[in-house]
Figure 1 (cartoon, helix red, strand yellow):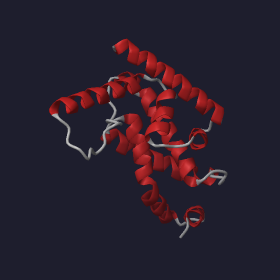
Figure 2 (figure 1 turned 135 degrees about the vertical axis):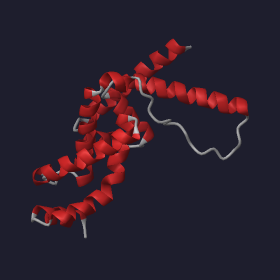
Figure 3 (figure 1 turned 90 degrees about the vertical axis):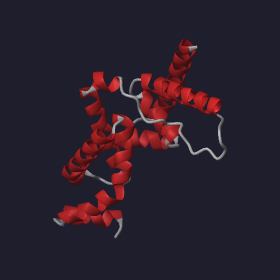
Length: 180
């Protein structure tokens, strides 16, 4: 069945059909939640909350954007609400290593130490950004989304995305210079 058929089935009273949408999108929602919360347990809780909200709001889904974009917005906003509620504690958490990748070549211990230090510095620099700058950087650089995709997911204009990325780069440059 297609996504729209599952949505129609849920709206016509076949509530178990929502499980198919959960199966299809739980990975995406969890990734959004883990990026914002920074911890697996909170991300699991937020993922459940997102799907509960989406289920309750499904009658308001108009199909003007894709279901995944609509669901992403719910996830993003739900996690931002969580973040605001837990802001003091959240600021001191470290997000996952965004620049970790599988290296084909073997690094010397010195190179590995320098790489880890640079990764930590980048993570700290990224964590020092406030919203909406942090999420725009994550979406653009780490999830490799276009300006248009980011604009649709966040419900803002493409020009606003460009502006937020520009400001985020400026803040990260300034922050990086302060560390040296």
